[in-house]
Length: 433
Image (tube, rainbow, N blue to C red; front, side):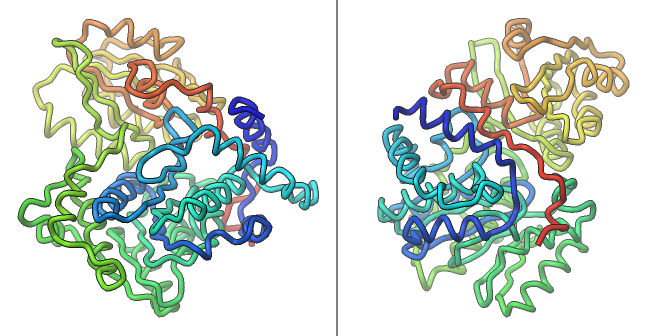
């Protein structure tokens, strides 16, 4: 087997959809030697900001000299982004080896209970991190939390970034239901840190923490400045990153007895955080800047709009917009379209893409004064905006990944973005036990 064949095998696992529940993951992990029991974790859930906070925590702990594992999703270009040790992507040959070693184990499952892509990748990551003797793994949930495959671990701390509307068809149509799924990662007596500020969502998290006797630290908006006092400035651009940074710092503080981190290491770690595709400003040529942001739900694009209004208030901007059909794309158009003088709507390289013509119509309704065009591809839009001074590419992490690859800012993948796709289940998470 070579790398391309290993990726093709992982593609094949998409046929098994996204079955929520922990039984398969526990069983597959046990067949693989229960690698998770040899590791320490910080488990991160939430609607937005998970990746940024994971990147901050990883950078801080790696700066102290710990060997860190980082597990995140989706990937922007290469599948290998999902599994990193000390911020080095898992090598291709290790992907091949792990796939080959797990294949015989998958035969021990009945056809109607075959592990899914995400379940297999979760165990691949656990096995690799254990083999690499990672001192600490920063462990991001996939979807939800309670029945997410990542929830087989018992962490040192759990982090719930925030609660907003996203994936309602699977997590539930109210903030309370979504919060209940995210709070499912809370373990008995394990400390919880959250920056959730929606009262109904926070009430759910507080109750779950109380019921499980889990110490709860709530990072409120007025706490942010105290956490960021001195030289610990937010390492990533955007006002929202102040809250993310405060949440990461509060987590480090709570774990000081188990994993001591000196103040200077915290500052150094925060100063060196790297997390592509989040308000990432690229100078393509002297007279053109491109801002890449993976905002893909109502809360995320609101943050993007606030950042644009604050940092580029007088800038005549061009918007390249691509959104997935199962997102609230009308709301996304209503939020971003008024900021742009020119708008190019594009398909996302996903079978779930929203129609560019429908996006263009929605943008036209919101901003009839703008020049609005629908394009057949992102490449076409980037070529047509080649002389525009300030271009914003937004609406989907998939789109941002494609832009990074097209702009030569990320190693080219082998058509691996499709691995981010999953076949929808027939029942919402909240209805499954």
